[in-house]
Length: 249
Image 1 (cartoon, rainbow, N blue to C red):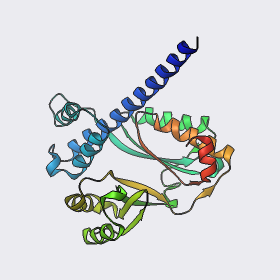
Image 2: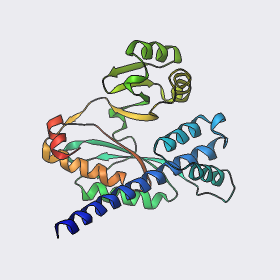
Image 3: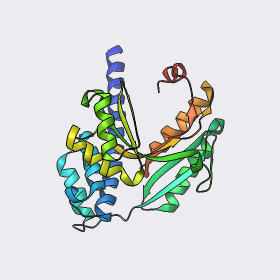
């Protein structure tokens, strides 16, 4: 029985990992599709598409899957008409939450997100109800081994970035949203492709919460991230590392 139970546990974990990977691929394909439709279907001439392709490669998406997504978006076989939407609301403990989505059905997406906020003790608000609590930034991440802190700072300033934070965990380069791809490409020419380059919402102020509230907030965020239409979730909660460790976050 022990062996059988262990096997079932392994298969359950593998199934969960496969499902998570499939959701990630679906989100990446949506970003590739939108990027290719809004610009040229050539990553070399389309910065947003180039960043999406790099992200797909880092997630180990097969090359032919990426190419099919680009071809479909460029009219070879048709493509869904995705639109970008931002949803805002409050979670447990008064935590401000921003949800970014790419969807082909606005009614479905809004209904699903509103339902999850309500189910997990939060409330969906109007557009701009919490965005004022965040700064919109371009963020480019490199591993610590990519360069020294001094070299990264110097290169980032020359590329037009606004700030750099370096530490044992790596380098984070911050820039204005409209400069993201220019800064990314300039740094990539010197240090290679970054681990990540994306638009981010960074909280101006944080909402301290206790362990019970943190557990509820994390469940809401996990549920939102599991939606196919949701590309990213941002929140302004503050909790100790000990609490996060106990919650497995």
